[in-house]
Image (cartoon, rainbow, N blue to C red):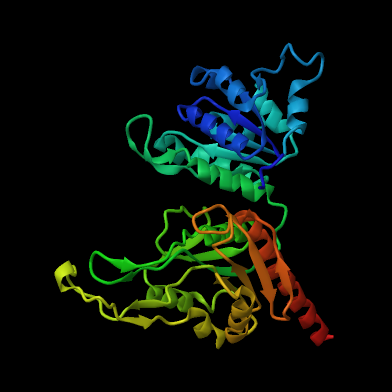
Length: 409
C-alpha cells in the first residue's frame, strides 16, 4: 500500500549483487510503484541496461549527457523526480564518493543533487565492509541523514563466509517503507502483538490447532513498527517472516503464549491480541504415539487459560484490543467478550464471509468499541485493516494525553 503510485529511483553500482537489483525492481513494480533505474558504468558489466529497461518500463540513465531529453540537465531532472532513491547494491566506491562529495557519474551526481531520502544497500567483501575508512564514510553519511540497510552474513562472491552479503529484498523493501511511511504517531510507544495459531499436543505426532495463518497479526506488527513503535510479536507456528526491527517471541501452545504475553505485558502500553489461541487442549499428553487400536472414541479435553481475561486485572492505562472470530450471533458474542475482558475495542470477523477467511491477504471486519459504537468496514487488505485499527489506537492515545493535560490544569 505504501508503494502505490510512489516514484522510486533505483541506483545500481558495479558489484556481483547487481543482479539482485533486478529482483528489487520487479517487486517494486508488483507493488504499483513507478520505477526508474540509473546505472554506473561498472554496473553495466554485470547486468545489461536492457534488463532494467524491461523490468522498469522506463529508459535507464547511464551517463550525464544522454541524447534523449533535449537540452535538459538530466541529473537535475532525475534528482527531483523520485520520492526515494535506493542504491542497490551500494559499493564501497560509490559510498566513498558520496561521503567525499564527489559527483563524477550519473548516479553520484543525481544523489548529490537530490533533496529526497537516499537508502544505501551495501554489498561487498567482508574485509572491505570491515575497513575503518568505509565505516567512517557510513557514519558520516548517516550523520547527514542518509539511511543504510546493513548487509547480512553468508557466502560471498569470493567464496568466503562473512558480513557483506546484500540484505534480503524484503529487508530492503521494509526499510523503504519506513522512509515512505507518512505517520509516526506511535513513536515512543511499545506495542505487544500476538499472532497465529497455537498447537496443543496429543502425543509426539498429533496436535490440535486451528486454521489461523498469522497474517493479520504480522500485518499489525509491521504497521505498528512503521508508525514508529517498538514492537514485540508473540507468534504461534507460522510460515511468515517478521519484518526487520521487530522482536519476535516464538511459542507453540496456549500456555506458552500466555506465559510470553504476561512476561512482556508491563513493558508495553498497547496490547493487540490477534492470535487465534486454542480454547481447549487434550487433558492428557501421551509420551508415545497413540496407536489406532488403543485409541478411545472420545477425546477428553480441558480448557486453556483465557489470556485477555488474565491481562484485564493488570490493564491500568494500557490499551487492550481483542479479536473475535464468530460464525453466528457475531455482534452479541463480540460485545460480551468486549465487556468481560475489559477491552477498549474488539475486532470481529466471520470466516464464512467471502474474503474474510484464514490464510488470505484480505479481511472484512467490524469494530465495536467500549461505548457500543459499531463500525463495519468493507473488504480490504489486512495491511489496510491494520491501519484502521492503529488509527483507533492512536486516537485513544491522543484522548488519554488530552485527559492528562486537563487534569494537570
